[in-house]
Image (cartoon, rainbow, N blue to C red):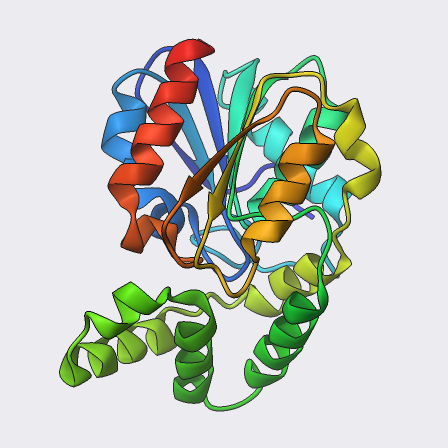
Length: 256
């Protein structure tokens, strides 16, 4: 794997490292928060292998190496210590980074995440992985079905729904297969009790991919963790960006 991931660095102030979700990217997963975050923090936004400009991995991804490379990317960008804002798969990366690099990580914000998969996630990721080898439109329809919350889904007209599906079908990063495999392989339940930094867990209450029960498990397992619940499906950046921004901003304001 590369020594550093392709990334952008914006803003000034305390360090904030972004860890995006499987099949996503830094801009896609955090775009609506970027202007606010960079107004007060130096934000390092890497893309995982096969997303953005980071080359696709030629070997399976493992959580230790990905977490180490994320940290090395921030340090290489001149940000020595930082809070990590993780989304979905990025929450597992964030937890692993915090336990492997306690001298670097000063806080965690874990959104729509998980410490371990449940049976719903096992079913969804299996279908997701197999559809990657087939018709991308069908994949996009499946992901929309499981990732969108009902209010957001039903607010779209039939034409808007088709436009959304078409956009998603064209977005799929080339490294998505390896990233989905990493979702399946990730389990940080044995590390949660060792987290010793301020932590905020943001649960998406309408999430049918990584259910809110998985976020509650994260919060219960990390000593002193705070839990905030936001009415949203898994696609929180699209469905509830302001509520997400407010929760993150409140936490960062109290833990500068």
